[in-house]
Each structure stands twice: as structure tokens, then as C-alpha cells.
Image 1 (tube, one colour):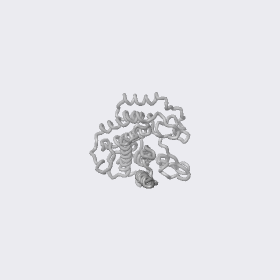
Image 2 (image 1 turned 90 degrees about the horizontal axis):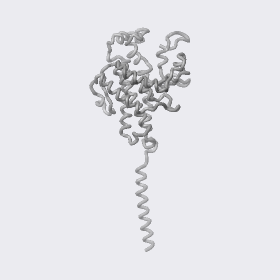
Image 3 (image 1 turned 90 degrees about the vertical axis):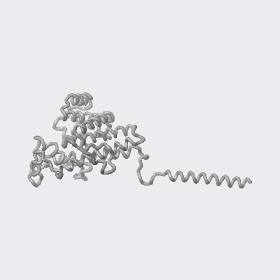
Length: 305
């Protein structure tokens, strides 16, 4: 009898162990694959860092498209050089006679919406996360809202009425929406920046130099008010930034746009770009801005376009 009881106990124990082992096996994370459970905010954080990378793009901040759209159309700049170097396009920009097939125009449109779609995805990820109230998630949300507002501000100034897409695009049809009035675009910009100002910190520690702050959002908001001739709100927003005591005009003017002046007290938001001996032409860490804006010349003074 004792032997039978002992055998029965072993069978029960083995059965329980097999169920436990089975459950443990089914609950295992995939090997060699990063999951959100490993670091709840890491996947969203990676997408945010990718937006900073996209912001360094030739098509939105560094190269010809943004300068043609926002400068050559005004009296600030002229398109020089010769026809083979795009000089034949000067009249199109000067006279506001746009051609939909124009390369720089299409590139500027496309890069702004590329960033907008990435921001929409980030905001959707955070909204559906179990960690949306974490400090990191709140800051990530503020960054995504800022960049979405920034890109819509680019688009509304360049084109006026544009499609307003504020949802995560899953199917191509999700982005196939009619144009929205400039007034509605600015309403969305106000909404995004007001919320971003609440989410972003006043400062980051030195490990995160260049990340967005409250001052960047408030300053951009001031600029959007200025573009609408809303002087009262512009004055309030800009005065908030000045009175914060975070920024100053102490850096000598001949140092501001040098390596020595990077991220100085006058810098409200500054894209972090580098050039190394090993990666001089690499757009993933650098920017073509200096080459595009450098002085055209010869020899040691042939600094750019």
C-alpha cells in the first residue's frame, strides 16, 4: 500500500511539473528578438530618435528644397548658377508657378509627411500603451507633437491648404483625405504645441543634448503666431521664453555659428550633426547644410554652393 501511494504521489508530482513546464515554455519570449516587455518605452524611443534623424534630411532642413520653398520665393534669395544647376527653375519659384512634377517641391512635401506619419505612429503607440503615464512616455509624446506641428507649419506656409492626417496610417487609403483649410491646420498646430509645452522638460541632462524642450515648443508657437499676425499671443509666448532665464545672448556673434558656439545659451533648438574623418559624407550623422549654404568660390574659399 505504501508503495502504491508513493508511486501515485510521483505521478501527481510529475504531472504537475509537466503542466508547469509547459506553461513556462509557452510564456517564453522569442530568442534573439527585442520585445516591448524588455523595456516598455524603448520601441517608441527608437522611433523618436528616428524622427531626429529624419529632421537632418537634405529634403527638409539641409538642402535645396526648403531654401527654394521658403527663401527663393521671397526677396531674401535668388537662384544663381546656370541652367544645368537648376537655374532654369528660378522663374517657377519667383513667380509662384509651381509644377507638381518638380523634384525639390515633391521632396519637400514628401519628407514633411514622412515625419508626420512617423509622429502619428508614435502617438498611437503611446496612447495604446500600458505605460503612457510614465515620464519617458510623456516626454516622447511631447516630442512627437512638436515635430508634427513643425512639419504642418512648414506645409501650411508653403502650400496653404494641405491634407490633415492625425491618425496612424495603416493602409494607403488612410492618408487619402481632402485638403484642409489653412485655418484648420493652424488650429491643429496650436493644439499640438500647447500640449507639447506641457509634456516637454525645461532642460535635459548632458546625455541628451539637443532633445526638445519646453522652450523649443513655446518658441515655435510664438513663430506660428507671428506668421498669422497674432501679435498679442506672439508677444506672450516669446516673453515667456525670454523670462524663463534659460537662454541668453552672451555668446559673441562671431562664435554662434562655429563649433565653439554649438548648443550655447542662444540655442533654443539645434539639430545635432557631426562630420568625422571616417564618415565625412555620411548623412546619418551629419548634415549637408554647410555645403549648401557655404560661400561659392575657388581654392580655400570654395566652401559651398
